[in-house]
Length: 192
Ligand code: GLN
Image (cartoon, rainbow, N blue to C red; front, side):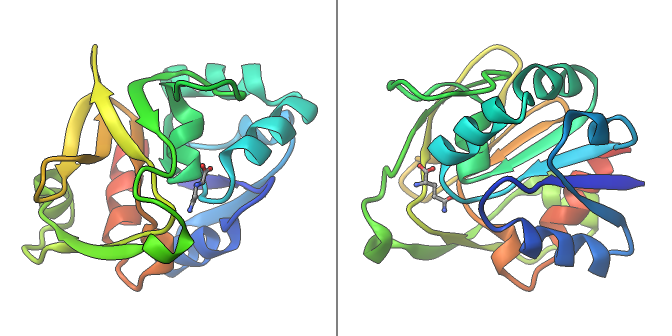
């Protein structure tokens, strides 16, 4: 199992640490040729406009779209925005996941928060029962899912914060900033 983490901008180092703790080979990815040997790819949190701009500069847009047709990709926060098909404003997007996202939907950095989520597929994949404690930082909301995309988790008020479309995963929150390895374990199960 070899999982790459897109390392153009954002908190890719934290994802690498989580993957290594799970005993998985984890590489920083910056060039199209590095995608070939991977079973899955994580796109980290950061600033989606910057990640998009750099992905264009590094000629990664088409190779990433092709990758997502058959292999697993998980976007956390800015990464989820980058996977989406629409954010109702102009910025480079991969557009490979049937979700519409609203950026900074909870307000500014000071409005960051944490919440316990019940995510059944995650509990099943990791054979655990505890709720998942999620960290939200200038988080986007998934406004809607369509086609093959499914809602994976909602806040108590019903707002969507995680979605899955076959091997594609999008989370508004940041599992790489917690001590809980279960979300990475869940993603690895999708990449197999
Ligand atoms: N607000 C950022 C964006 O729009 C995402 C924030 C994050 O990744 N923590 O790209």
